[in-house]
Image 1 (cartoon, helix red, strand yellow):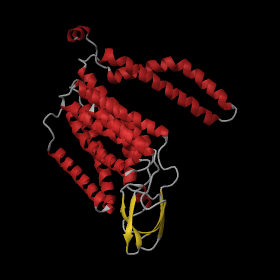
Image 2 (spheres, rainbow, N blue to C red):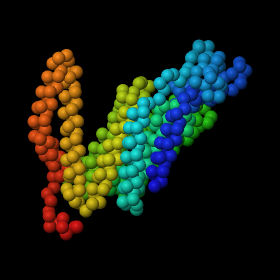
Image 3 (tube, rainbow, N blue to C red):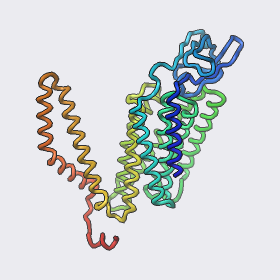
Image 4 (cartoon, one colour):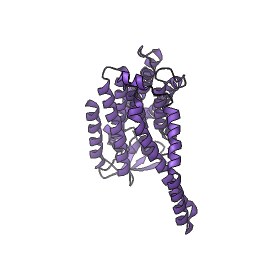
Length: 385
């Protein structure tokens, strides 16, 4: 319940904050030359536009308290106009998508924790799932009007998420001896990043330029460390314990986290524009809770995943196949163009309908080969039940 309450509080506060216009995230105060920038919120609109403490303010609108536009003078005497700009924020569709993914993290983390409250893996899953839910819940505010509280909550929750993921992966693959020296050192480094961020927040915002790079590096190392731990277990023989679960978890974190790391996090950390907008790659993280929770729950259900999960997997496969066929049909309209597009669309739709059953059977065989290669022993199954 605490996980769901934290997520609902985050997403509710973010929605209310989104109703207000954004501001530059600056405070102004009198100085020897008139009015100067006293403080700038790291990662806020003013920060991204180049505003820094100490710059002289030539004019500001609508008021010095929450300015949305200002004309600043840099230390070299150059004129720097800064403004929030029109359309600052994310679309309602993106906000709904992020909310759904965050709810998936919260619900699945809570379900796993309720199922196995004393299991270390379940508790760590609930921890990083709850942190991800909070980060996604405040994302519409942190990526929209940029209120200070949302940026702080998002930074802390994502940093804690990065600290938790390798620990969860280690417990998931069977390390029951607790965190080792490398994990403690990794946590200590994360604590140093948090302390430096708080220093930049309160005393010297210019330090955030270094914190931003360390934060991106920390999160990238965290994701790849978790992938390495899971890949090591997943590459073992299929008869070893938890190998199938490790493969599912590896697929989930690879599909969910790698697009965000490679297409958004690394380009932004290195000073370039993101290849894909953050709210799109962040929405793909929904693969992570789905894959992890599925793997954990399947491991708990007495090995009868064929009876419980196989129909669900077949259904998802059929829906995915339909989506792919629909995308191919729609893409053909743009490629053909003109009058030929209707004929090509109708032709591909007919071919897809005729071949769908054949393709579905092939997809099922692939699923059986990857996930359900072991044979069912009905006598042993009845004995377990």
